[in-house]
Length: 247
Image (tube, rainbow, N blue to C red):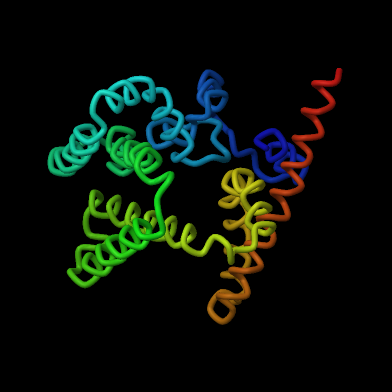
């Protein structure tokens, strides 16, 4: 996807996006952490954002996290939450706190905890989880805390995740699988491409005053274009991989 985007930019004769870059920083692109370090140094970043680098770093930490999780998952979950609170009150580095991998360890550990505790749950348990999570969301919204602190934003995200996950389990028989399977298949390609496409569409829409009057049509048009390009890019990569493996 990165190579295809570079080709598109150069073929389209747009201004060179990599003027005065240190060639050594291309190593960051190969490792997938160029967006993560973009705040500190100009590099060859084009897609993936800071989030991709953060996830890669978390997976590098995974063996240690897994070891601690197997020792005591309850204590690890509590300790990682406490770490969020400590960082929120003491952090003063240049990188935004919500991009710091140590700050996101809590959500990472919760994902492991959720899989361990909620994989094979009964309908009654799912209803209880749904009630608990929606109550928590309501309380945070009504209290005015939502969006005010990074730690509470993480908690809010977790509560939304739990509520949607349990709701899906309760309604599983009534959910059409084919469209969801399609969206899931191309979701990673969509994640890589969406900011590039979104920037182009919003720039044009703003310049032509379309955004002020056609928010929802532009939103659905953007989704369509993102998934159309994702389908094309994903299929192209799959064909290239298939041919290279057969060779």
